[in-house]
Image 1 (cartoon, rainbow, N blue to C red):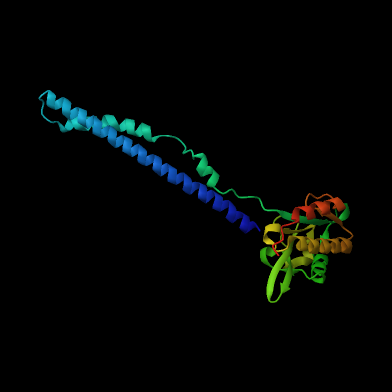
Image 2 (image 1 turned 180 degrees about the horizontal axis):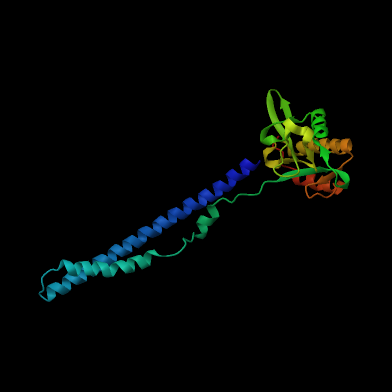
Length: 233
């Protein structure tokens, strides 16, 4: 989930930078062309003036003319930030925030879950420890393995120290998945909701939504409405 979001953000930034470089290069070419025209015009006037006066050609005079033109070229080149035209701005993709569905299971009365109790519960509910140091719910069919949702510790960095769960305590767990990464987000939510209810019953805990407010029937309906029509099956 986090890696995909980061890729989208980097893609948007990269495209913006490339477009900016392109238009900046075009602007610089125009500035250089204008400076060359200015140099040619100044040199022409100098030669014509010298010849009309009958004076001999002077390299020093020519150098002075070029030096006089240089500050003007330098002034022309300082244009400030490159402003992209509206047509280019429309073509630059903007990273969209992914829809992440979350449920939380919280102990009552400000208590905590013991690490060993969590480990036993996760094992009984067929959750498997894996990537990012958290637990995952897998769906396996015809040799294809898909992660339906994930279970993390509610406190950052969200990991579980499976090698030392005897000394570990948690103030809550969060179940989540990214809708865009799920083939069937509605089914993933139903599966995650069922497991969250089982965890809350097992620990006599509070089942809450992502905003830490107790999950209600209307809250479930709101999530289902968000996911309606997103299935790719």
